[in-house]
Image 1 (tube, protein in one colour):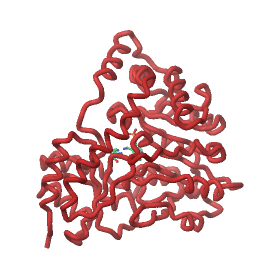
Image 2 (cartoon, helix red, strand yellow):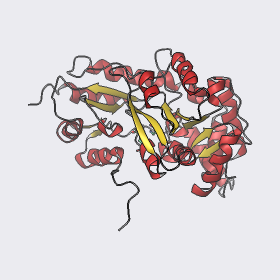
Image 3 (cartoon, protein in one colour):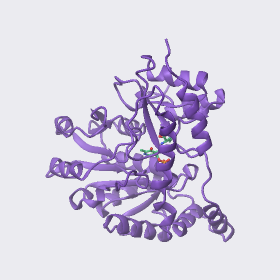
Length: 382
Ligand code: PMP
Ligand code: GLN
């Protein structure tokens, strides 16, 4: 028997609910991925680079032209320069970047502050490194960061705080004030930041994504992580990246080279070329805002309560007017009896006091309409 490093961790809720959706032939609004294809141009670029012979190992930090284009995009959007030579690494999705960054920071008994609900991969990585996740709840119902609670959670063992904006699963985004408060809170402390910005291009209602790299002070202690999976509708390609100052990236790469060495080569060249046209990602805000609005407009006379997501392609729905059963039970009910699979949010938090589920609206319009039609009919469960 293995003495498990993760005794309390089960199968990811995304795998559980997507399987339940398939088994029940339910519309799958659970796991976060688009049900439409990525662009033909991107697919053709991938093929072209394969045919041209770009099929062997890439350099371990990623192909240079992609790192250069990530650097240009970051500078153009956020005004911060990262040196492609030393400060940018291409990873196998954001998941690997998160795991690598957490692993190089956390040693035995170190503490990592997680703002809950928190994306499901953070805590297992902290625990597998011998550290302790310290949960700080976001304020209900707007899911803003409660900085007093964060302050109280900081101890001499705190090594890391993970920020995620736009936020999965709540769809909330951070403000300039949050950045200022975090700057002050971490000033003169030996605490690092991982900023999970995979939904950086999906922000609504005229708001702008605030990257942590826009703070000179915070960028010096931050690993900033993003994913092309979200941005280019290609979650299955598993390509993401991490940017950080040289001294941090130096340590990151030490582990990265032995976790996977390098990310698949033709995808990197394809993304590098595709990034040359900012229209390939800047349209996403309005693209997903239309989907959010279409979905919510259909749900406005339902028994669900909601505040429109500020970003991401997720929308929380409060079902407390329908039933008081747990979010896991309700998610199972919706999947098996109503035909719409969703995600309970309790796996994102230690204690879940509310009747809330997450839906993903990265779906074709007709699928969203069909799903909303079914959800509208859910009035009361006794
Ligand atoms: N962070 C967050 C907040 C996510 O929602 C996801 C996946 N949806 C990831 C990280 C992982 O991204 P990737 O699929 O690129 O590994
Ligand atoms: N991040 C996606 C979500 O939130 C799922 C990714 C995964 O299945 N690991 O639904």
